[in-house]
Image (cartoon, rainbow, N blue to C red):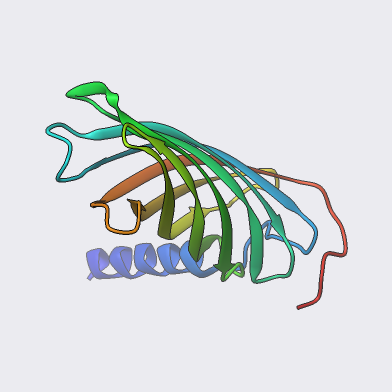
Length: 171
């Protein structure tokens, strides 16, 4: 009987922690910057993809953010093979809880061994923001260099910083 109460208490505490209103949440006009490391695989790479990522976003509303990112992807089996890309991004975020889900899309240009190609990107992420000034993000993304290029799946672990306050745009 005692064990059942302990489990019930643990489940209730976990539910409160996961679903409690955020101690700190994004506000209109706040900016967000992140540094991450991505890893993944693709058909054209015999090894794994690995590379850093830097991103800056402006929270235009409580739900929408706009910004830019720079990423470098290298194939671990052929380090000179890979791409460096800069993308403009739009992100929809549900920022009401400590755990923050979001969906993002981006378009930009990538420098590859084949030359400069357009890059398309789709991303889903889950951020933990338990502090006003920082958080941690896990992202799952699909990128494609060129219109008919082979895409790659990547998972990113990133540190996210928040700063600034303002009125933003009311969209």
